[in-house]
Image (cartoon, rainbow, N blue to C red):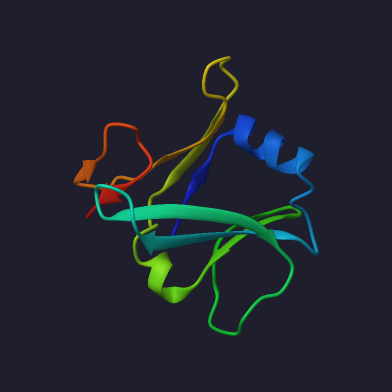
Length: 106
């Protein structure tokens, strides 16, 4: 299982202090107009069943098994444009996305 993170996203995660012992947890939950949505939070407590999706230096990204199956190949970028700055998730497994970009379907 692999995800890709742009250098810009790595820099922003470092600013948010996503470094050992903290890590980024990404989850896929039901919701949004297309059926599924991402949630991400900084965490420091891992479950035995968590899967490591990305690990480089002190940066680690994990997901629960139910979410991980939707995240293989996920690309995470960061945009600092004035209108909608933030992290961007591009999922090659998504077959459809809503107009606002907050949910997807597989």
